[in-house]
Length: 336
Ligand SMILES: Nc1ncnc2c1ncn2[C@@H]1O[C@H](COP(=O)(O)OP(=O)(O)O)[C@@H](O)[C@H]1O
Ligand SMILES: [Mg+2]
Ligand SMILES: [Zn+2]
Image (cartoon, rainbow, N blue to C red):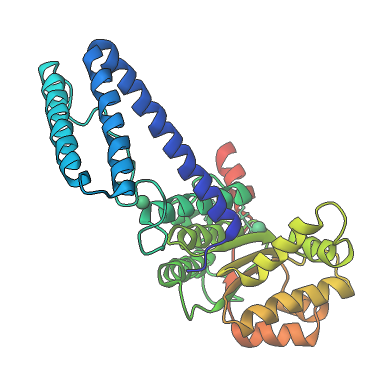
């Protein structure tokens, strides 16, 4: 799993916040305990002083050091004992003055002794990913379970020899399966069909599931993706130039790219070449892409270059969405 620098930095900030919160909580507990048992403060001051002496001794290393060290050890143990007895006499937990760690494994440092990210940091990272994704998609908590097949007609469409509901039931299963199996070797998908049939909905479900399993997922509308390519090519030094370049890099290198609403952009030489770059680069690197579009197969062929069309035809699995605009169907149902 390749970690994204920006998200990793944000996860580490969250971890730093957790450390700060824990420290504050520890200070509060300490202040309460000291107020209740003033002798505790004296003991802690003494213990800290002893620790300072130990450090001084180990640096000096003379003959008498060992004997002095034993004496310090004995004093320290006696103080610890007294502290424990005081706490228990006042009904306070033995560890109530200890440092607080949310993750005992790495003591909230985020990395293990082996230098690898700790599971707590990876969990924060996954949450950052999910947060970024939901902010991009603004789709609330939609998931596969909310996808309702009743919005699609059960009447057989003679053009396809099946009902929209049957077709969409297969599309739904295919998307679920794709999300469950997502990983190395996943293919690219073309979600094709009219407006309001659930293409954005289902691509968001796949995106969310893949992201929650730790894959890096980027969602962009085609318009926004091409705009980023344009800015990073022609206005690299202007405002937003760096952000656009970073977005382009993520579009090309993320583990799952969702390019939504292809065909709504104004097609130019430049958008053609940007699309080719995205499709071709990702295919060459075996990184799956999900493209959704309202265009028919003929419109795709007419609009995009032969190079692009042949890549998509040859390498993408097409899922055809059938039915009537779900938004319109929902409205009708509401007014019945
Ligand atoms: N099967 C479904 N069940 C429930 N809501 C749906 C379903 N399909 C689409 N919707 C809703 O209808 C609207 C249009 O769907 P959307 O995915 O944006 O369509 P498309 O991307 O194909 O144009 C969205 O608000 C979406 O949540
Ligand atoms: Mg859409
Ligand atoms: Zn940890």
